[in-house]
Amino acid sequence: MTAPRILVVDDVPSVCHGLRTILRGTGQVFIASPSFEGSEVARAAIRIIRVHPPDIVVLDGLDGHAGEVVAACREARVPVVLFTAEIARYRRLGVPAVEKPEVLDLIQALRTALGGADV
Image (cartoon, rainbow, N blue to C red; front, side, top):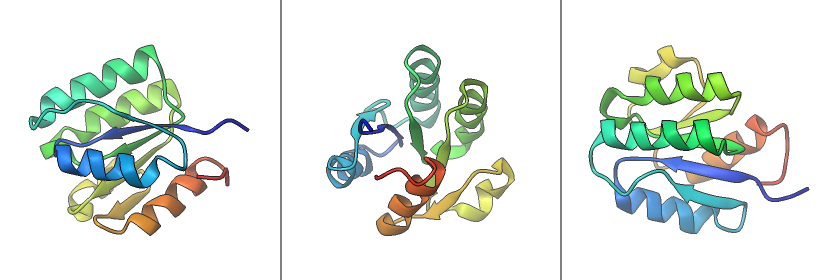
């Protein structure tokens, strides 16, 4: 099996780069946008999901714009795992969620969302 293509969608560049480093050995990691603006990052992620769907998306809350990205993921049938410090705020989205900074839990959630594939 080929390594999964993981799209990291977060509005904090240091988090994006940290996740890229941590997940690099588990798959091909792409960053949606190096912006600090949640709405801009959401728009970039949606374009990527629609044009070049990844195998899975790791998504931050994006200051309230996460729902737009989740909708695009559902439309493209791309699994998504929410990775945020504000889990309670985003539970309504109905996607698996891991609280930052629990990276090991994130890796397990990615495995589960990919049907047990090595991540």
